[in-house]
Every structure is written in C-alpha cells, then in structure tokens.
Image (cartoon, rainbow, N blue to C red; front, side, top):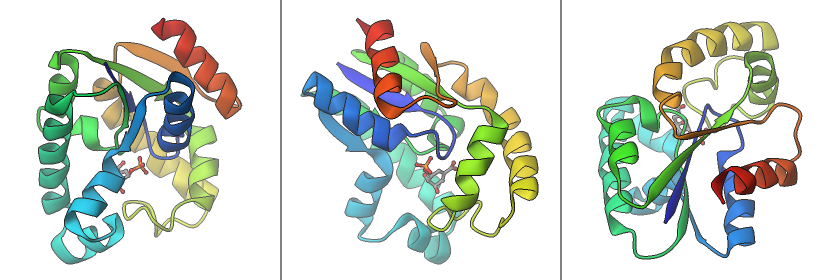
Length: 174
Ligand code: S3P
C-alpha cells in the first residue's frame, strides 16, 4: 500500500509522514526530495533556473513513476501544489493500492507557520509578514481546495502535536 499525504505548504506532510512511516515500518518518500535528487538541484534552484512550468512537468512525471512502482509499503508526501496540476489528483485516486490523506489546516494556522518557514519555498519567499501571508494563503487555499477535498481521508492538524496527528491517521486508516 502507498499512503499519499497531501495538503498545503507547512501542513507537516514531510515531518508527520516520516513519523507515520516509522510507526508502520513503511518506506518514506518525499516527492520534493525525490525531484531534487533526480534533478541534482534544489526546488528553489529549479524554479529560478528553469521556471515553475518545468518543475510542474517533473513533479507530474515523478509522481506517476512513484505511484506505478508500488513495490513496497510506502508513505509518499507530495508538495503542496502537486495534487492541483494536470491530472495528478485523479492519478492518485485511481492508483491501485494507494490511499490519500489530506492534512487540513486553517489559514491563520498555516500563515503563521509559513512566515517562519518561507525561505525554501519560492511561491511565498517574498511575503514577510503575517497579514500579507494570510491574504495570500486564504486565496491560494481556496483555489486548491477542490483538489485537496478529493482525498479519501481528511485529518485536521491545527494545534495538534505530530504524534497526535499520526495517531489520528492510524485510526482512520486501520
Ligand atoms: C509548492 C510546495 C512545496 C514545493 C514547491 C511548490 C506548492 O512543497 O513543492 O515549493 O506549490 O505548494 P511543500 O508543500 O512541501 O512546501
């Protein structure tokens, strides 16, 4: 089985995904790290040198490969935009042996975290205060919601510890 974690930037897909994988004794793959390895460049460098459209093409290509591989039990964390481009979310839903979980955070919760954690994220690295970040995240999340909502399971993350989120995921999965 592949457990696919989706959600907005800073919703903890990577950190919580690693914990979940450890608990279940699954392999862990982060799609952004996978892209960085394959491309030999950071996400920031890819956006700067080749642009977002190139990044989205690679994201779609590697996601497809990882969904098809399915050799081992895996927790697969996607970048925040991955479900929202091309047919990616439909591919996740269609993939045999895959189950998707949306890590759902509110705008104020995510915006507060993102102001601190924006440097490696090209889409928001220029936004340096909570008010502007809240406005951006509010609009962006609204656009992305139709994609995130398609996930088979939803877990609320606001003000929960990582182990609590993992517990919630385990209880809805098994
Ligand atoms: C993006 C999210 C990032 C990364 C890229 C674009 C997005 O991943 O894929 O910067 O479009 O939301 P995280 O969600 O892990 O920050």
